[in-house]
Each structure stands twice: as C-alpha cells, then as structure tokens.
Amino acid sequence: MKHRYLPMTEQDQQEMLKATGVAQVEDLFSDIPESVRFKGEYQIKKAKSETELVKELSATAARNANTREYASFLGGGVYDHYMPIIVDHVISRSEFYTAYTPYQPEISQGELQAIFEFQTMICELTGMDVANSSMYDGGTSLAEAAMLAAGHTKKKKILISQAVHPESRDVVKMYAKGQYIDVVEVPVADGVTDLDALKSSMDEDVAAVIVQYPNFFGRIEDLQSIEPLAHQGKSMFIVSSNPLALGALTPPGHLGADIVTGDAQPFGIPAAFGGPHCGYFAVTNKLMRKVPGRLVGQTVDEDGKRGFVLTLQAREQHIRRDKATSNICSNQALNALAASVAMTALGKKGVREMALQNIQKAHYTKKSLTEKGLEIPFAGPMFNEFVVKLAKPVSEVNAKLLERGIIGGYDLEKSYPELKQHMLVAVTELRTKEEIINFVNELGDSHE
Image 1 (cartoon, rainbow, N blue to C red):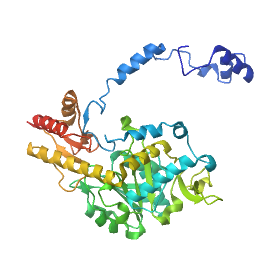
Image 2 (image 1 turned 90 degrees about the horizontal axis):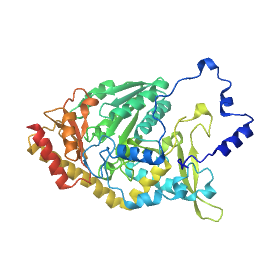
Image 3 (image 1 turned 30 degrees about the vertical axis):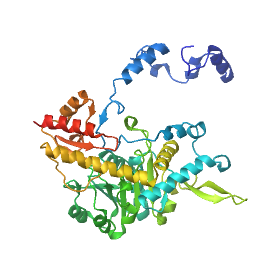
Image 4 (image 1 turned 60 degrees about the horizontal axis):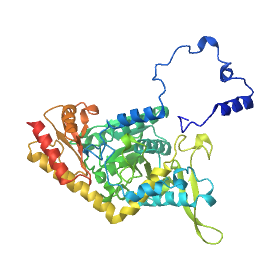
C-alpha cells in the first residue's frame, strides 16, 4: 500500500456504501444538479508515490533558511530562544499530546495540573491576580482583551498605540468591526507612544488604552506615565507583553495594568515559521468572571487530597451565547504545557538570567553597530530589539546576509512606510559573540 496514512481499501469502501444504502460514490452527489457540477480537470499535479513525494517535499523543505544552520537576528514577535531538551520529551508523551479539554477531572489530573501551573507562572511573571489556561496566540489574546474592556465599560472606543505589533493591531480591528467598536491609533514619538497625543485622544467614550511592553520597536514604554492617562474616565489599561522580558522588567501588574496579554512563544515553543503558538491572558481579581476561555482551580477531594478542576468557563459552550465573554476562544494546552516545562526547567533565576542575556547582547550589538557608523534612530531603554537605519533597502541587505548564513532583521517599511531602509534587529541569548561580530561587519560593509 502506497499511502500509509490512508488505509481504506476497496472492501472498506464497498462496506461503507452498503451501510449508507447507495450503489456507488457518485450517488452521494445526486442532489447536486448536473448544471453546476465541475466537469473539467483540476490544475494540480498528478499523485506521486510515497517515495517520490517524500523526496520532493524534503527538497522543498531543504530550501528553508532554518535557525539550526543560520544565525537569526529576526524577531518582530517570534524569536529564536533556548529550549530545554526536556520540553520535547514531556510534550511528546501521548497522554499530553492527545488531550484537549479536561472536562472529566477524575481522569485528567495531569493535564489540569499542567494548566494550573501555567496559570500560576503567568501570574507571577505579569504581576496579575488571575490567568486563564491559554489562548491561540498573542494577537488574538490582545483582541479578546479589547473586547472584554469594551463590554465591561460599555464604551465603544479603543485607543491603541502604533508601537503595538502591526499584526496584533489588525486582529484587534477585525474583532472590533464585528462589535461596532471604533479603534483609534495613537502615534509614536521617538519609538514610543506619544503621551501628548494619547492625552489629547482621551475622552468619555474610551473603553481602553492598549500599549506594548517592550513595544514593537524594542523600546520600553513608560507604563508609570501612561497608567494615569489610561484610567481617565474609568477606561481600562491593557498591556501586551513579551513574557521573557518580564524576567527583568517591572511587571505591568505592578504598574496599574488591568489586563496583560502576550505570546508564550519565547518559552519552549519553536518559531515554526510563525505558529502555532500560545497566547496568555491575565487580569485583576475584579475581572475574573469575564476572562475568556477556561480557568483551572485547585481544590481537595473528599479524602482531603489535592486536586484540580475546571472552575470558571465564560464561553458559549457553558453559558448563554449572548452572555459569553467570547464565542471563538479556546486554549493551546500542548503549547502551554511546553511553556510551563520550559519555565520550570529554567526556574526563576534562569528566566531572569535569560532575560538579562538578551538585554546585554542586544546592547552590545547596538553599540558595535554605532561604532561602525550606522545610525540607531530611537535612543532609550530597550529589551532585545532595536531599530537600525541602513544605506540600502533592507530586502537587498537581507539577501546578502542570507548568502553569508545570516537571517537578517525585519524590514520595517512593510509596516511603517515612513521607516524606509530601517531594520528591526533582534538579539537573543542564543547569539554568540562571533555571530554578532559577523552580523555587525556585514551590516557595516553594506553601509559603505
């Protein structure tokens, strides 16, 4: 048999046809008029044998520039980080990778405990009171936060900084469109949210102010100054944050945030060409009953033994649809488990050390580039990303970098037309001094 994952035989097909009471497969489409049926040939390749297909797909996959063979300085929301080897071992266990929603706690204690630990660690990182069992990714998690704020305040305007990830802003706008909520972007000044523009944009209709910390340009937003502005008129303060950065930065929860969201990708989840990832969602106690998705709680059984159960589930499967916080939210249990295992393996000291290495190596790279004569447009505090201005188009520079075994930074012109020839550079703890020097030299040569 050529198709090892399509085991249906001719006999299987005949048995199914007999069970459904039809003579042949074509009879299943008898209700579709002949006039609308497609009569031609599909413009697709003819089927290949398994051996031929594996060869073709392997050759195609080999054309990818992967982070095992290339030094990556590409970030913008997805990063090349250290993943403890134990992560893959744990998430490869069948009882975890086949599990979905643990509706039956008596047979799901392992899965429930894993989710509970994830929630606990997210709360510790963000400084918030409650976290849910995870969401699809950082972008959808942020959009859910915006919708929660609008529903809670009964207001119809969201202010979002232009320094928030462009794709996350698009997701927020898409969610808002269906709820007839107006999304207003607040401009940027010197790579951070323009506080004067934010202040002038505030009015009684604002449900929430959204900023990113660190923001899309790598800069550290001044949450302490933004918070009082965001809370004018009983609006809410939402912060989208890289959880790894919180190993070194003051948590948003300690600076007045009502909701903190983000993507757990930096912890044990591979870049995987953009997904799947794992969104986190954390709130203050007063918003606990409006959190989308699921919450796992800790309890004791009739014998006094520690146990775990699903507690609050404010989704349409469990309550009236019109009362649900979200109608399309779910969790990423397997990726949340990966993040939990990674954070556990690193420990509090390890997470902080990893965050500090990102800061130190990024600053070393930035300093080295300035010594080569390249301009760093946005000065000020940063985490592991920064913007560098080039003398040539970023696409041209990146093509040459790729030839040298280097994955270059993000071309900011794609999202910010005014930042033509500006590259967003990410430097993680995995980048060696040699790789950084090679990257700096290549950018320096392109600048001449």
